[in-house]
Structures are given as structure tokens and as C-alpha cells.
Image (cartoon, one colour):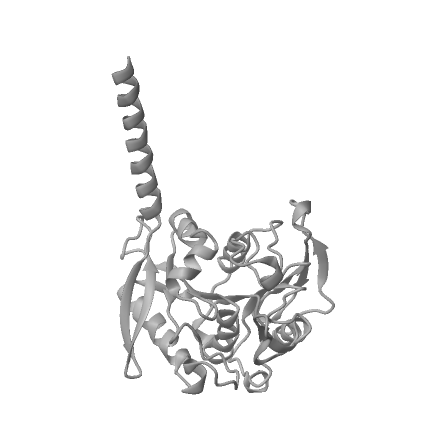
Length: 318
């Protein structure tokens, strides 16, 4: 009986180990390199098992935040986009910024990407072209989302390669103050923004980006209302927006989510802001990757990953 118990336990632990290994690799992406501007650029790509080159698929480009990588951003939302890709049938690309940063249009020179004026717009634009050709991506259904520094880069891409993007979804980022006046989109584009009203790094009301206990400044941004107003005005949407609140699914997180929806925009575009009242520099529904004292609260009232894809997938270039 004792031997049987030991055998049963060993079998149980073996099965648990197999399941853990399988689960850990079930949504694994693959790292690849791409030459651009005299540099070997890297990116991670997730291809669902259902992918068939004969069937054009949408492409979602996901941009990490500062000090991040294409690998790390996947963990922030528990590989949520990869799981959705399996369910919805799209391809996800996670490019890597130089030194963990993007040249998003700020004038600060602390990071190599901005100090050396790295051509990140050209890199991502060329990567999109490459994937359209190699993976048979539907060129009318290419989307970009990004977090923090990646969100600011997303806004820059919406300004400069508008013709290649059906819609964008920046999270916890605003338009850099030094770049905003240079933004000149070539057509209307749908924008979904998600921002915490108590973001201690990228201030909701605009101003200096501050990081760490010593308040290191990393450039200035427009306020979230100014940023959203820019896109709603450019897209010729109706004002004021329709304001509603999402269900408070987790009262314990001390946040509420206000949804501001700008309707009747030109060429079928939409502009939506999810203002996370009480939320910090965090991905709603994602990981509390640092302490609340440093980055603020993570809202559990919405799952930003699902909200983003549900918004993006309904848009295509006409």
C-alpha cells in the first residue's frame, strides 16, 4: 500500500510537471532579427497554430515600455494577446527598442534611442511591410498598441505612418510636448487611449515625466485630455463625448473606469478614452509589476488586453 501511495504521488508530480511545462510554452513566441538602418533589430513574434499563409490575417504590433523588451511586455498581461491570437486568429509582433527604449519624439537625451535619433518609425514601418509580405498579413488590418514609452511611440506612428495603420491603442502614455506640433496624420484614424488619473510617472494632467524616488525627469507630455482632444478634433468627431462608467467589478482595487466615447467621426473613425480614476502607471487587468508607492494602483475593473482587441478588430483601412 505504501509503495502504491508513493507511486501515485510520483505519477501526480510527473503529470503536474508536464502540465506546467506545457502551459509555460503553450503561448511561447519566437525571437527573430531584422536588419534596418545599419542595425540588427530584434522582435518577438507569436503565430497561432491555426495560421495558414493562404488566409490573410490581421497583425497586432505591441510596443514595450521604457527599460522593457518584446519578451517582457508579454508577461505584463499574462500573455493575453497571445491567448487572444489563438482564439481570434491574428499574428502578434513584439519589437525590441534600442537599449530598451523607443525614439518617441521627446527631446531628452538620457537614452540612446532618443540621443542618437534612432529611426524607430522606419524600423517598425519596414517590419510591418516585411510581415505583410512574409506572413500574408492583411494590409488593411494592421494595428499598434503600446505601454508608457511604447504608448508615446504608438502616437508617433499614428502621426507618421497613418496610411499603414487601421487603428491604435496607447496605454498610460500621452503625446510628447516637444513632438505634438509636428504630428500631421495623413488621414483619420481610430484611437483608443487608456490612462490612470493618478499616474505618478506620466502625469494625467501633463508636464514632466518623473521616475524613481529621486524624481528623475524624462521629458514632458501633453495632458491626457489634450492628447485625446487632438485626435477627436483631427478626426472631426462630435463633441462633447458620451460619458459612461464601466461596472465596478472589483471595489477593493479603489479604482473606477470612466469611458469617454467620441462618435460620428470622419470616415468611420472612433476615439475612446478609458480614464481609470485612481489608477496608476499600470496595465488594467495586468500585473502589479512594482509597488503601489512607485507606480500606483492596478485596476481590476477592466481587462485592457480584451478591451484593446475588441476595439481594434472592428476597424480596417477603407
